[in-house]
Length: 115
Length: 113
Image 1 (tube, chains in turn blue, purple):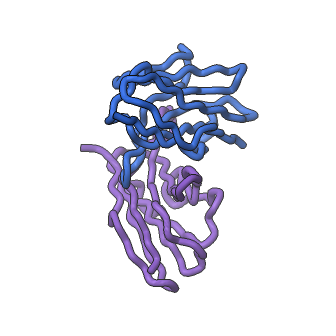
Image 2 (image 1 turned 90 degrees about the horizontal axis):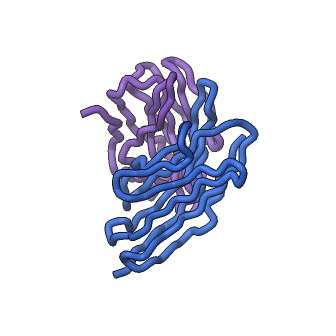
């Protein structure tokens, strides 16, 4: 079984400031890792994912996350946030093998960007 | 455009009534999933299906039922046995083999009145 911990439920930050949203996971098997973003009353959109290869992954809108296997972490960072980044962010994992690939989610982090 | 369609977007139900939430995908994905979202709790898995005519219970299946008669469709029924059904319900799908990610619908907000 897997579990995901997002350490901060709310993160307020001023526009153009850097931000880090923390994610730690626990698993007895190898996992894929994901960050999803959710805007109010909408579904989840994939922000970025780690499947294999380089441990640093980037999104098209300036977010990045680094897979750290020894610390079992997958923290999300952005060097300069915009008002439009205000949303809820979910970290999730699924195992790398087997036919059942259900996701295990963290409880979410609400990022609020202040003007 | 390929994607996942959930309907309706908003649904109101009286206590004691069953209600069915629709989920349709045209991505040719083998696997489909239903999640429930409550404030501060993230998403929890209700049911999932890897292939047609087969499905398994997730972490919170009590009070819910599903069917998978077609590859494209995975409807969720919220029964009167579900004690606290008011929530946001999200459907997702993924490839069975060569998994890369799950794709989500826009969700259905169910309110019991």
